[in-house]
Image (tube, rainbow over all chains, first blue to last red):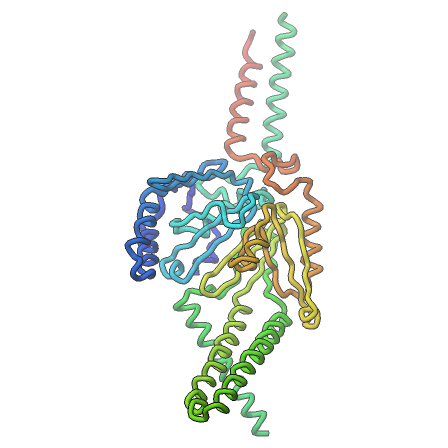
Amino acid sequence: MSDSTTSTGGFDPLTITRPDKALMWYYLIVSLLTGPGVFVAILPLFFKYETLRYRFDGEGVSMSWGILFRREIYLTYRRIQDIHLTRNLLQRWLGQATVSIQTASGSSSPEMAIEGVLAADALRDFLYAKMRGARDHAPHEQGSGGPAEPRGDEALGLLRDIRDALGQLAARRGAAE
Amino acid sequence: MSATEASGRVERASRWIYLGLWSVLVLWFRVPDRPPALPVPPGETLDAFRPAEGFLHYLKFKFWVVLTIMDGMILIGWIATAAASPLAGAILALPALAIAVLPGIVAYIAIHLQYDTTWYVMSGRSLRIRRGIWTIHETTITFENVQNVEVNQGPVQRWFGIADVHVDTAGGGGKQAAAGHGSPATAGHRGLVEGVADAARIRDLILSRLHGSRHAGLGDEHPPASTIAGWTPDHVAVLRKIRDLARALAETNL
């Protein structure tokens, strides 16, 4: 059961740019299930898969796709209201999931539906750790090789040191002039 | 004596059938058999719970009401047909019985599956709801983002001692989706904690988190001063560099 894996070890969403190849299989099967409409159904899905790009950065995530009509969505992590993780039967068989993100806009449908990321649980944990209200909350979310998150005290201590050093500098300049 | 024995046997057999069905779901349909997880800081525990027992009785009550109406209509239709033409009545007797019984069995099993696949997980900061069998839907909401909490209880629900808690985040649209084709359970900007016995406790827990927050719950960009622990390693690295520069400056002779 992959749903209980909460560790983000070895998973770095910042490196994700393209959906996994498995997504095309999912799209293929979905369009096959439409029966006679398979050729109509597969074209938009194929082009969506081919043009789909993700970009995760420190502040937010963007997603773009489309060949005739292009769409690009950008949202910041801190504006996330709810995260939905949806798996239908086919997606479960193929080990996939849809991670949908909602901001406080008026529509009830999700603003962004991230498909084709195989480590969907890890991605959700990453987004969860970044969303509002979950701060200073997931100590293992910095598990991408970096050191453990420093405590606020260390930052405060550093700031005090800087203040003292600058004060010293100012005093010496004052004495020299 | 033998009647109770037989009913016990039937109960055991149905439990075995249900367990078998459940393991097919878990093995072949990849239905998770464990509650969902939520990242929590060490030392904090997760509160994972299901709807109350009363919710199962409530669903079954609704089921029996609907089944009685449906089967009554089928029976009336069949009697009318049989009165008009006994031959047609005889031919239609088996199909009518099948239509009356089979969907009921499926729905009855589905109720148990719905009950067993619904999970609510609460940490001190957020709520995660899982529901669904074919499409498994998991919603995660942090309490900081909650705008309002609504407790709904109908008369039948009151009889069974349960209530629904709606946890709304900003944005709306959930009601329109519920009025349309979308299911209210999976509509956006709303978490539905359905059929719980201690709705007041859940509401108070969420509201206490809400009162503690001084923000509008619209994804404020600036973290409150209390979250100074939100310094990232990058921040601290830059701070270290600035400190070293300042110290070097302070120690050089002018």
